[in-house]
Amino acid sequence: MKTNGIELEKEILDQLPAIVLAVDKNFNTLYANNAALTFMGSTPENVIGKHCYNMVRNPQCKTPECCIAQAMADGKVHSIRSEADGGTGNRFLESTAVPLKDEKGEIVGGLEFVLDITQKVLDEKKLNEQGRTIRDMSTPTIKLWDGILVLPVVGVIDTNRAQHMMDSMLNKILSSNSRAIIMDIQGVAAVDTAVANHLIKITKATKLMGCECLISGISPGVAKTLTQLGINLGSIKTKATLSDALEEAFSMINLRVITTEAKQ
Amino acid sequence: MEADSFRLLNGVKAMMDSGDEYSVSGSVTNRCYIACINGELSSAQMGQLYDEIVRMAEKRELRGVIMDLNGLAVLDSAAFCVLRKISGALALMGLKSAWMGIKPAIASSLVDFGADVDDLCICQNIEDGVRLMSFQK
Image (cartoon, rainbow over all chains, first blue to last red; front, side, top):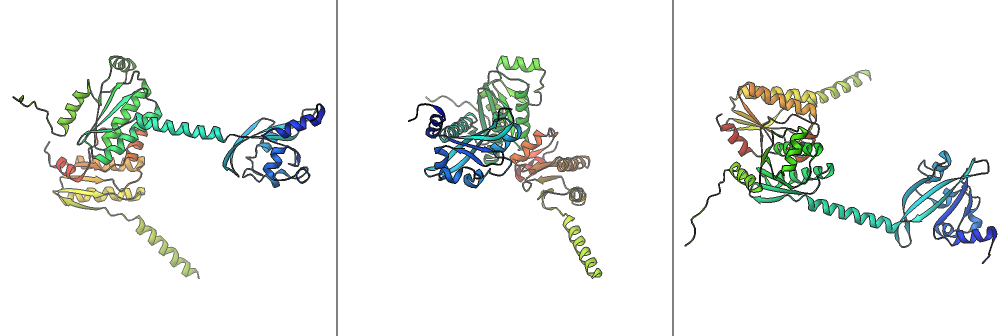
């Protein structure tokens, strides 16, 4: 192994597992390290001085999405993610391109280096899946009685979750032909204008499906905030506790709870 | 040649006109007219729907009209307005009207664009609707 000079730098670049590729302004290859040569399945003689897009053949080649072209056009760093079919299944690659400049600072070409981010992408996918699972778990619409549904809400309501809650409720109403749905928001610590609007929207939408929406378990803090914000929930039926709401729901579907005599 | 193309043009025009023709399909039970509203309607067809339902209400001495929206995949604001107007006109004529079979997607889009849905009468099925109609206020 050489100990100094350009040769050493070249050898280091060759041992780098990431693909490194340098081109001039006309996309003629100036340099390709070992990883790049392996990727293209070629030798230095067949690569240097040839057009890079004839050897790489990415879907982005010769399109405005090519990050080297973008980097050379505006002199900034550009990154792009792509999927390539390597020998060992699909690999996800992240290509980053920077412009190459001469002493005067004028752009004379571009340098691209490609990292294998398969593990990162797989982790991201797993995270997304888990996020979806948590979201599904956080909006369980439960059938409490024939014609009565209940949706216990715990935690923070944001726009995404409110939308998901609404979709889940409406679909459940459709499939179960329910007359009343109780939204129990005892576990919701704070409510702001946006959340209140979501609640109003949800009640309106359920009403359009022919199902009355009752809200139960509004905590003192939430009630105080709602009145201080000046939000009018007058059109929404609210009950103190889940059992009160259930009683109201029973009366909506013409049922009544009675106490039977104690067994001897 | 010119006559041919003229005839062709007339034919196409006639076809388009007949495509614009809209007749409500539906049936009367218990003096309630159940109007099935299918497919996306043009504004002209919406006008015809309006006329047809109102005319039907007068002719058949109905007590109420149930508008079945099960066949609609989307409902835009213009169509929503026409349906509301039909409900309003029926109310003026002393008839009750109920909307039936609104899909979840339509319900959420209606509240998203802030449609005024507060005083609408909604029913889940025909049985419900007929019962609603037969209640004396």
